[in-house]
Length: 206
Image 1 (spheres, rainbow, N blue to C red):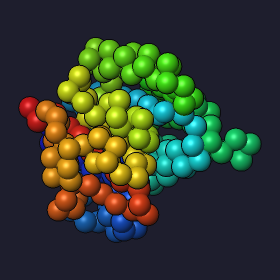
Image 2 (cartoon, one colour; image 1 turned 45 degrees about the vertical axis):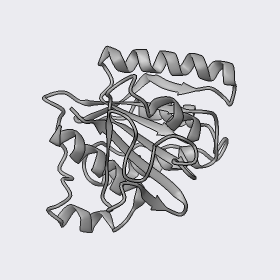
Image 3 (cartoon, helix red, strand yellow; image 1 turned 120 degrees about the horizontal axis):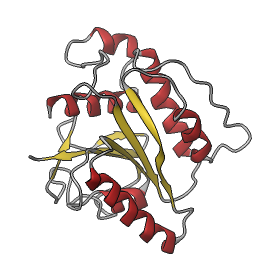
């Protein structure tokens, strides 16, 4: 579990850019040294409600940070043609070279803001998480947070880019997720804020 928490906090720090990565790497309280998940690569999945301008940018920021810290080799991603297309970004990430992490090609879900597709995606994603071949989920946006922040699975989940997670019923409060999932935080309130964008890290309490 400690490895999972360290991995989650690493990704959170990268996304928040609280401090330069060169400084973070020298600070012993942040475990930035690449490590495997019990001898295997960390298998990462992605879930969103639909295309949105912030989502690809958040993914690219994450990848740049992981590259700088030695978790993966550089990858060039051009989003100028379609800056809201996270599927194109994910396809490139799935081909990235790394000894430590894998962006699983088929562990990507987007409903394109279709409520019917959303229901199917939610069911399929949870089934995949229960199967146990995904180690970490990125839930991008309000729909994603609502669909994956629950007791239906125990896979660590980072909910990113939500304006108000409490009002959106993603978590019960800033101190309590309301589920059998605990909020891991690097701030006293359990919810990390940058430019009105909340990042919530949920891990199994077991």
